[in-house]
Length: 257
Image (cartoon, one colour):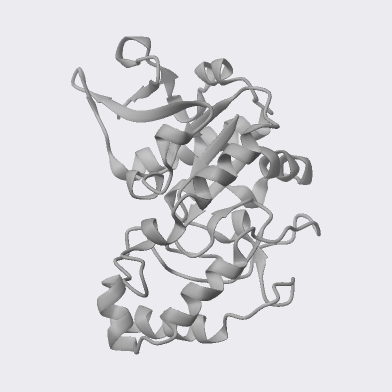
């Protein structure tokens, strides 16, 4: 089973060292093509491209100017430890042990606008580039077009070594669009997380995102490689809701305060 996550916009650029082990992203040559294009943007142009304020624009212009190959531990750090948005607040990668990280390395993948797809221990230099960004250059109309079949093919390659041929989608719609579902050689399973309020189920974005991280932590720490075992997920009061689940979309809910 492979679990897919979205990246976060916020980063921890100086994470604690849990392991000395690392890997190199598969598609750095493609990332370099994007970086060269992004270096053409002025701060104001970067702001318009990414819909961000002037301060963030300056930060990201500087990031792309500093971005360089080859990646090593003096200029990069491990992807899973650098992301720190709501999903990763739930995952709390900085509190995992080395064995947990090694398990994640084999079973968790992070989709990325700049890197395509990342393993948890892949070295990463700081960036911001959402998959839905409308960057149009050469013959590519957007990032989905730029990455094409590369992400899907990579997932299929790695699925061959998995015991349970399941792709667990915990990514956002924006990022999962980079995967061609029709070509995935596995069952695609999606999990939803909702709050029970006054007899109704409601999706609350901040809680839903954190729950995706909690589910990923549950998978990593319990070394789950059989999708059926996901029904036992019970962190932060969530439980499997059979009534509102389907074969390919499983619902987890909890009573809201």
